[in-house]
Image 1: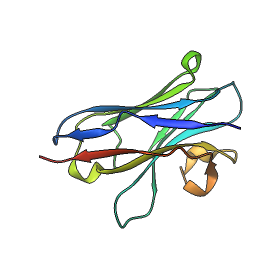
Image 2 (image 1 turned 180 degrees about the horizontal axis):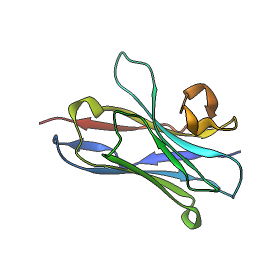
Image 3 (image 1 turned 90 degrees about the vertical axis):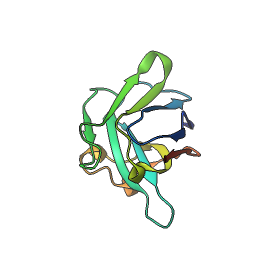
Image 4 (image 1 turned 90 degrees about the horizontal axis):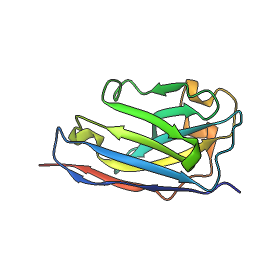
Length: 126
């Protein structure tokens, strides 16, 4: 069974950067994707970004386009989320998950993902 472990969270000032990592127990080529999600206190978990493991195609939520970049290193079984120009509204627990349905990256809907990691806290505050 695929296991995912997030890391790289922390406290950063507005305008700063962080790089999150999602380490997988395995990441063989296949017709699935890895998505990043976040959940702020009192809010629902929302999709942030997604990458196809086989093709490398990506998708982003409008709120992070131009600031976040998702990438994968298949040799290291790791997916990254580079977050730049961070804003206080980016604060939350960030999770990675594997798609369980085809075309999951189109909408980055949490219902299309499973095998969730434990999450890593990101706090953007001065």
